[in-house]
Length: 283
Image (cartoon, rainbow, N blue to C red):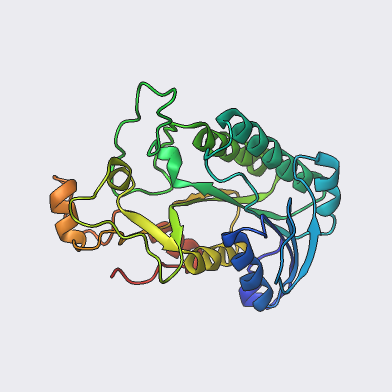
């Protein structure tokens, strides 16, 4: 067992996938700057990384397995992010294939931990209007890792299936595995605030939650370093995307019946208890 790397001051070999993307690049820098031996990878070239980089396509299972040789921890971010311009079936099939290649390869190569970037979207917040005729029911707040998935697009379904697959590898193969259901991510100076009168169904469905890329990267590092056994699902975030309403006002306006004194519309307590990580103070 790797144990608690932070307390033991041990350097681990950590593979970061999706390292050419916005989150992946910041994660690679964060993990490297905290003293770990980092190998970064992506399907496209990445520039400006402080660590070794190898370009591969995670759809290639043999290349993925080889890349995992000698790895202690995988921080797996390398997926197609949302259905976007690509056909949704392409997003689904590529994501599921990449994920099983990483998970199976990690099990075969004796990797101890997997940190998997999942999505808050799997609660059903972004219905695919081309095909979905029965939208998901609004979730029960506060959101947490125990919130049941109810995906409404194939990107979210790919993450839902991959979470269950990851649990298999924790339960049956002895890996420590953590799924992080990230909300909208943004830079510190670009929080995508929602103004009064411009609120949409998605923002309400997701509890107006977000994180900065820095906060998300810090959580990836914390889950990679701390002693965690078995399988965990964490749903991090903070309800700070409304430009005009503070949390009690937000609850009164959009979540009647909910206690306005709760600290947030996402419960970060299980994450703090397990890893010590917390989002920045509500503002």
